[in-house]
Amino acid sequence: MQSRFFVIIDARGAFVFFSTSSHFSSHLHLNHQPLHQVKAEMWRFPDRTTEIGTMINAYLARSKELDDAAVHLLFSANRWEKRAELLRELSKGTTLVCDRYAFSGVAFTAAKQKTGMGFDWCRAPDQGLPAPDAVLYLDLAPAEAEKRGGFGEERYESREMLSSVREAFDEIAAFVDGRCTRWVRVDASGSVEEVGERVGAAARAAVEAAAQGGVPLRSLWDGSAGVVGWPLKEEEKKV
Ligand code: 2DT
Ligand code: MG
Image (cartoon, rainbow, N blue to C red; front, top):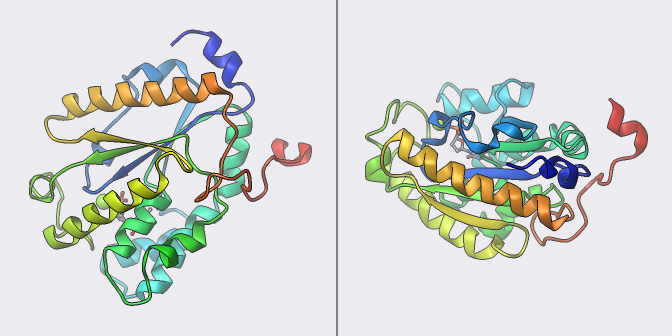
């Protein structure tokens, strides 16, 4: 990555997300990929370290039952509580690479196919959060996903659920691509090295595109400029 990258991206870091229908993303490490010359941070949602994240974790670990709608809102609240920090990093020019975001939020809840909890309902609570410059969607057949390590330990890790999630992701992709983000499907089959190569190439392209375009930060879900609390006030940048 050329050094001009830093100049161009100065005003704002790129914002790239992983979304995955499987449970593979956590095994990927970007450090050895070309992004290493960019000031980048790895984030993930859910952030299980906050109080809200602790409740989400208990739900996922099956030690706590929660209402489907309530837990959907908790996942969203977990993004909202990180919003100020996220915007601050972007304003400093940090590139954020994030494992899951609101796209997973919509996909997993919509996949439950509960009456009254369709796509519109699922999208609503994340309206106004910043949209990523690109989503790298790591696509894997559920039958392949279940062969991977640790599969089945947490809630949602069943073949039926992941098939439904995968269908939901297709619908989300059609809705968001070109509207609020750029959706890039990455084949997640094969070895960690193979997928790492594909992810690295796609991430690099996404970061370069964001850097060159001087693209404004856009909002979930309509791609408007209405990101809540953006741009930051001078005093907010410092904290
Ligand atoms: P990880 O295995 O990646 O920690 O994900 N999920 C995630 C939701 O249902 N809603 C959300 O908003 C997010 C971000 C996907 C844990 C599981 O939580 C699901 C898998
Ligand atoms: Mg997991």
